[in-house]
Amino acid sequence: MKQRINYYKELIADYSKPGLVSPELADKLIFEAKKLIALKEEILPSINHDYSLEQIEKENQEWWPTHCEALRQGRGDILTGEYRQDLVYFCQDGPYYGLNEQKEREQHWWALIAQPGVTMCWPIVMFHGEFVWFEWNCLDNETNETIAKGSVAWVRRGHRGGCYIKGEQLTFYRDVFAPDALLSLMNTGK
Image 1 (tube, one colour):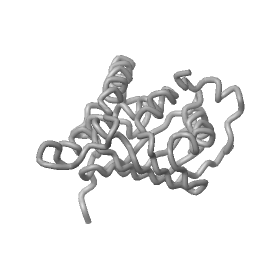
Image 2 (cartoon, helix red, strand yellow):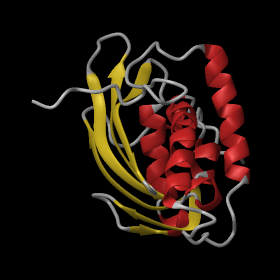
Image 3 (cartoon, helix red, strand yellow):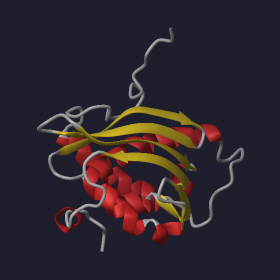
């Protein structure tokens, strides 16, 4: 049987379960997330000897904890900034093309998984070049029930490229559309 591994042992923060990230580190990761978004170039950079798959994978590993913290804090402004303008997003409600098609639907998902009293966790994350694959779940902090879960594949060309393809399977056990009270908690950057 293959040895189980800690997917976070090489990363700056562990988001596999609640309670592993200090408030100070969380603040630092939000600050870093904003800096990384600013590095995204208008034209998708080429993979070549100056920008190799090894470099892109390293950058994706640096980015990952910032993404997790942005979701936990309901930072829709940061989450949207991670995408390219020409995003292709495949999911059970999709496909969505560009940033505007998925915006209405995705804000409900973000509001539900970042709602007060719920902690989003990513027990598995794997990196290969520009591919990031992960499983996530949202746990009710009071009852310990899983309110939602999913698996996701991102194609992210490092800090310079951002995410240009996303495929996701989501399952919500409580609610599918967020009430206005939860939507108002999302920081959309408006």
